[in-house]
Length: 214
Ligand code: GTB
Image 1 (spheres, protein in one colour):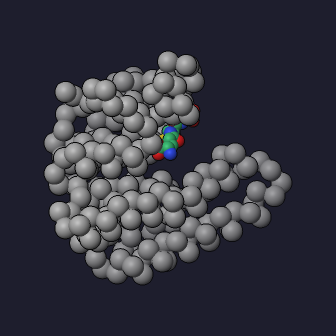
Image 2: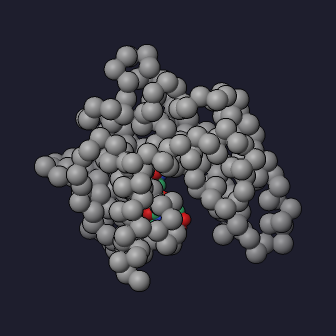
């Protein structure tokens, strides 16, 4: 059976690959699993029908036969568990890859998301400018720690894994902030990941949704 994922019909990032369907597309491309895409509008996301897929009314959701999943991390994990190539065979290495997926989502992603909140939600508050250095420094602290861990390593822990998909996609959300450039080893890590054919295919597929509408 071909799984179906949900994605924005009109992504606010205009095809920059920052919305979270990109992680799932990338994982599916890495393992060579074909997939269908259900494009949804912001209004549809909040309808009762869509909330049967994701109670929180967000993309991505994933359906395969009787199984429905939401949360991009859980979906990527499921893809990695049910296909060869994205989780190590060795039990310890596999647990560490799963640990890194959690680290990406619960330790590295929150301060990066906060930058978006600081700009888009709080940007007009009279205290926004004063808060911004704190927000950026929290990201820099995480990236300093991540950089120290990685050194010159190619991937987070040995071979490329589902954890690298999640981590790199989390880091790419820093976009044009310039913060990634302050960490050459991490910038090289994200560039290495973006050069993977599976990333390129996933990126092209989500970009085509945007260009197809213009
Ligand atoms: N924790 C969930 C997961 O990982 O799946 C979070 C899912 C989520 O936040 N989805 C967002 C969504 O559906 C899209 S990815 N939002 C619609 C809504 O809440 O109504 C977040 C996102 C949105 C836009 C950009 N962008 O324009 O650059 C980047 C990322």
